Length: 290
Image 1: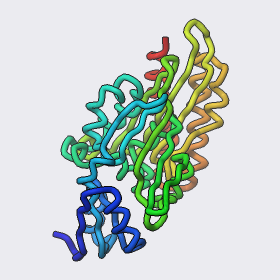
Image 2 (image 1 turned 90 degrees about the vertical axis):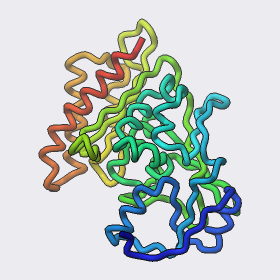
Image 3 (image 1 turned 30 degrees about the vertical axis):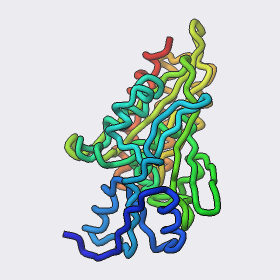
C-alpha cells in the first residue's frame, strides 16, 4: 500500500511533459516504467507531490541505426531491447545486460532511461553503455544538452539531470565488425537478480593480428556508479589475450575493486569474485573475435 498521496499527470507529448515539469521543476518525479519509484514510495524513502508519467510518449520509444550511430529512446523497455534485432546483432553486451534485468515482468515495464537516471551502483545497462562510450541527450523547454554517460552520473542515485530536463536519447557509435562485446553479472539470487558484481567488455582486433588494438572494460556494483577501468584497458591494448595477460588483467581489476571498496563488509567477497566475473566477460568477448 502506498504511504503518500501525490498529483499524477500523464502527458500525451514530449512538449507537454516539458511544459509541466518546467512549471514544477524540483517537485516533479518523472517515471517511465516506475519500478524503482513505486518501490521507494512503498518503503517511505521518497514522498513525491507531483508525478509525471512518460509512458505514453511515443517520441521516447525507438531503436534505430542512423548515420553510423545507434540511437535508443529512453522509453524502450528491457524486453524491447532484448528483442531488438539491431541490438542483438550489433551490441551483444547490451542484449546480455537486458536479459539479466530482473524478472520477465520487470523487463516488460522497466526502461533503459529509468535504469540510467536512477543511477544505481548496480544498474545493469550502464556498464555495457560505458564500454560503448554512450552519450545522453537531455532536453528542456530551453533546448538540449549532450553529455558523455560517465559525466552524467554523479554518485548513488545522483545525476546531472537539471530541474526542467528530461532524458530524451541514449546513443553510441555502431561498433565495427572487428569489435566484440560481452556482459557478465553475478547476482544474489536468480529470482531477484540484483547485481552484486558485473563487468562489461568491448575488444577490438584486426582479423589475423595477434594483438588487441583496443580494450574497454567497465565494472558495476563496485563503486557509487559503474566505471571504466583505464589501467586494465591500457595494459591489454597492443597485447594478445594469452593466459598470462588475462590473469594480469583480472589482477588489475581486483586491485581496482579493492581500492574502490575500501573497508566495506562486502570487500573480501567482491575483490575475489571480480576475477571470475571479469575473466568470463573477457573470454566471452575474445571468443567472438574474427
